[in-house]
Image 1: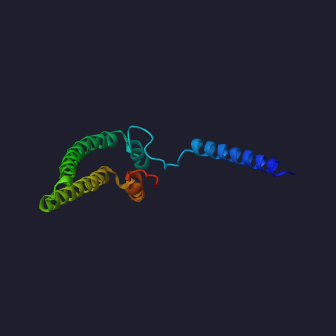
Image 2: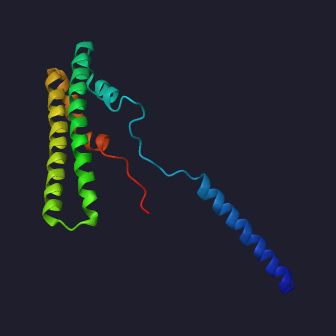
Image 3: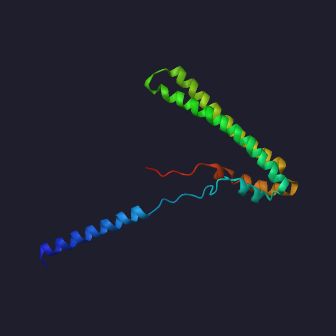
Length: 153
């Protein structure tokens, strides 16, 4: 076999391999853990797991409305504080920076307390026989409410 023929075969093989790799990378979708598949968020999942009856569902929906309003208000506060913090990137006011970071921490703490208290409120609408289901649900909360994992670059 001549060198020219061998080189031609190698070039064709490398081109074919590159095309296959490109197709694999383009067609492959990153695996994302299942998150909330519907616009209801975890609402239906919680209703089903806790076996709520109609009156409990109604009470739960009221809790959701109140919780959502409180969290949205805190989210606005958080966005404002972050915007103000990042506007200081061109300045060197360490006192203001420390104050804003502390404020962001406090708002985030408030949000976590709102979430925690929301689940205590859910527990309060459970009947005695549903508390076992509630206990099981508490072990899944971190997974259910954590943001989806992002791909590392």
